Length: 293
Ligand SMILES: NC(=O)c1ccc[n+]([C@@H]2O[C@H](COP(=O)([O-])OP(=O)(O)OC[C@H]3O[C@@H](n4cnc5c(N)ncnc54)[C@H](O)[C@@H]3O)[C@@H](O)[C@H]2O)c1
Image 1: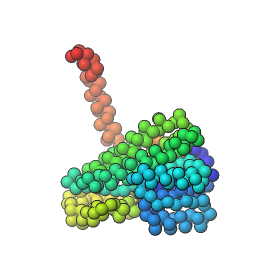
Image 2: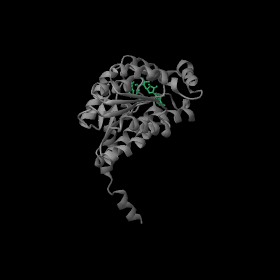
Image 3: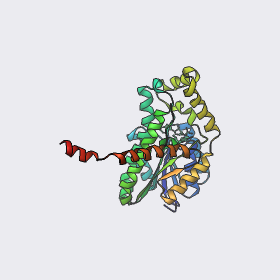
Image 4: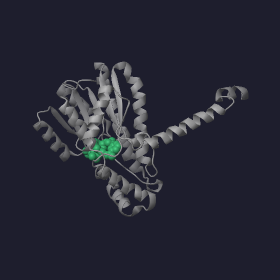
């Protein structure tokens, strides 16, 4: 998609950080904006700011982990603007901790927002894109969707899933004129370190307790490192601009920094080693099955 003038973009998690920045660069490029977030107060402020800049804006409070809520937001967008051209499935939350800290509620929250939020956006928008024979899905994963860190299993699993889903969708939807891009940022200044503010039930209190007293050693160091690195990370604005370039070029993956390349290469080397080992087997599994059959 080369020209965003007159296009309609729905962005989830638009009230803060990376979502706000993507909305801002799209607004500056002439797109009408449909802003979705779970935080009504923060969203109202952003809507007010963008309207004052003379942009066409619709804002809707919704929890992306609910398909019905996301579907309603997409339908209202089409009702208001007559079409939808871009869906940016950006809303996401951070949840760290070693295996002993895992709970059903934690897994359900992180997968509900980070994975099902993306699934719901894709499900809701794709019928409109197919009918138009055009559109673009911009999913926000993370560098944590390409390489994994210890004590980061929950977040990492959700983000690896988003990268895999995006690859599948890219091949599935290309014949319908629909592009798919997955943004994999490193550390970016945002409010992600306080994501538990939006967690349901007693998760916020539990998470706060874990941060304060729950863990020592590597898990504690990871919490502290993430907080520090997010505070000193890239400006979200720069990430928004990189995302826009990804949309323009229909890039599959957009990376935002070089720091994590050695980690990605380490994983690629493990795959290359597995391929080499596979090459050493005298017979392939199918041939063996025939031999033993
Ligand atoms: N900041 C980083 O270092 C970083 C790095 C890699 C990937 N990311 C990803 O970027 C995306 C945006 O995060 P951010 O860093 O801007 O954090 P942020 O907390 O500043 O913004 C996230 C926004 O999503 C909203 N949100 C949370 N739960 C929601 C829900 N259930 N439904 C609707 N909206 C919800 C929040 O209210 C907030 O406005 C996330 O998917 C995150 O995983 C962030």
